[in-house]
Image 1 (cartoon, rainbow, N blue to C red):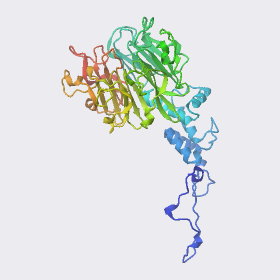
Image 2 (cartoon, rainbow, N blue to C red; image 1 turned 30 degrees about the horizontal axis):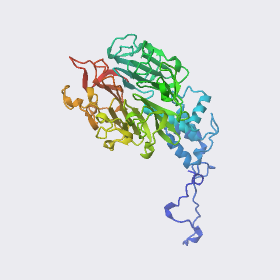
Image 3 (spheres, rainbow, N blue to C red; image 1 turned 45 degrees about the horizontal axis):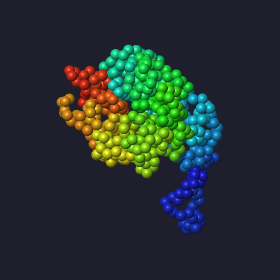
Image 4 (cartoon, helix red, strand yellow; image 1 turned 135 degrees about the horizontal axis):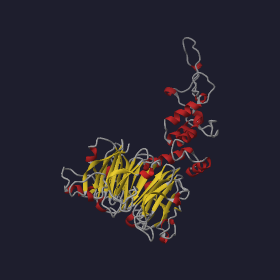
Length: 536
């Protein structure tokens, strides 16, 4: 390592100060030895470390090891070899660390089809470095399960996506939201045949509506033609029973969509947020007719800041942004209950930074927007919640509202990696796959059922502080995702997805949304039951 160029002080071996050899009295003459520094760039003198002789091998190692962007930055900061131009195509001025970051970017499906001009634009938008672009892409994959198996517990119906992008649907189908060409309910998962040949990487569901995103950035929608759960004017008067391409989004490469009660939001590959509907009174930054079906860019603070994840609540939107200085969260919409996280209950027509995370010294990793409350998981595994606190959904041991993010102290010994929120309900997944839940116990959707009796009243009890869902420990496999119904109009159900692609369901199942048959007069299941589908 070139310590002279990196600014690191020269190491004195064994803490012996330098002194001339001739000053030492010896019995017999000895040959003079000179300490040699190890340089990354050298002239092949024995004792040196000539990495410069094989930079292509070093580049291959950096790329194959999938180093974190921060690790690549540290290499540049500590050794001149990694920050000097490497003289490799496609850009001879790039350092080895930058080239390694670019190579890892090119492995991502959403990055591969980008033109050279678009890549440069994304690079500048992320802060002018391929390491920052890589961090942007990795952050999006981590919080959205992009291109991975996923399950969506929608309002009355469910969507499951396999690792190969095949989509299954089941449950309520009154508006054609299952996408199978009919309005009949299905109690068992069935593939959506109309999507054959199209690989889906992300899904979202609202009341009577489903939206799917393909690996080419196209958006398909079916069910009600409303861009929110609430029907505006002519919206909702028509329905599609098979997936239809959203024409107004054809020129935007979309990577994520989320459906609120009054609006829909989508996220582009470049990290731009667009919203549909709910433009009255200039809500969500724009003034439009309620029947407008054109996407409108989210203006204000996020115009030039890339966003990696969006989450819609009943009447507000959270955006997880990626900046050179770190990750941050912005909120916009209705502020009742303090769910925007700014210490007040006022509305915000433009995205506003939630400053409390800086006070807590917490770098957000994942955001979740419940109907009335919100949650964030930090890079260090801490969980914060805020908003309406009914039924204990914030996990602080009471039902009080919190107008700024507050750390859930009951989870201080847990390193969280994932959080999901619904209508006054919260789930947290730890790094070892343990699942904790708290909040409203209606419909047995929390998964707490200590006995064999499905009528046990305890499985409907509200939980004020996080409790381990012991029933999910019995599946003997790591849980990687939880999805629960995020609607005030439907009884909730919950999915737990394992690392190998097994899916377990519990909660309300009166419309077939659990994907399992109920017996007798049952309308719900208190215990997680395996759904007959292999998403892996």
